[in-house]
Length: 287
Image (cartoon, rainbow, N blue to C red; front, side, top):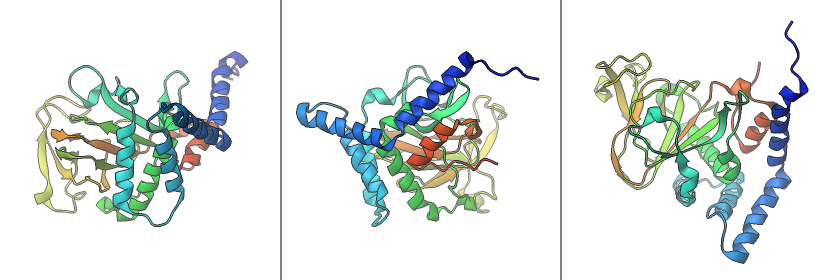
């Protein structure tokens, strides 16, 4: 039989649960918001999003009088207020060409490589109001989901990108379909996603082929892949992130918001799962 883990080996996970319990306590979150408000009122300094984030959280709790245009404008303003340092990302090099950092972040569940578990990201606790507002927007737009009849019933993470032209790639860590909405003032920047004929509603005229220039996870170089450009500007569109998808070049300011379900959701500690559910994420039920 396997030997039980020692207390020293279990210490990192216990410490993680304690931190999550403290971070997600409602009174602690309220104190954090009040502290930001006091600092900004006294010194005029602090996070440019802190009080706006609190307003978004309050609006997300009000489940009536939903206006899609106003909700998109409020979220766009919040995204613009996020400091540049919080956007910096040096990972996910498979989605862009060239070196250097890009502007991306993930709200919700991420994979912790050291502890080998799924936990909420730091950005989730930094912008809880924005997180709840995005999930509220998804909830309101869900009845309009038309493509393939895929429901937005499982969402563990929200990936945000700013002015990113992603090359053709696949997301192997996803489970099920993804849902995207794009905000900003830009020209071009359509999202292309691989779709079969039956997934496109049987309309071959809507499909456009893309040539794969380099081998990508089972797609040999030189192969032609059928797909379609998605209309995601201020509207919810759906695609399978495990298949090829990418962004065409654009000019202007473009924010992409992608809702998806991680395939490591079953490796989530109870406290992390509770923290995500408090924010409004729809985690799959454990069997």
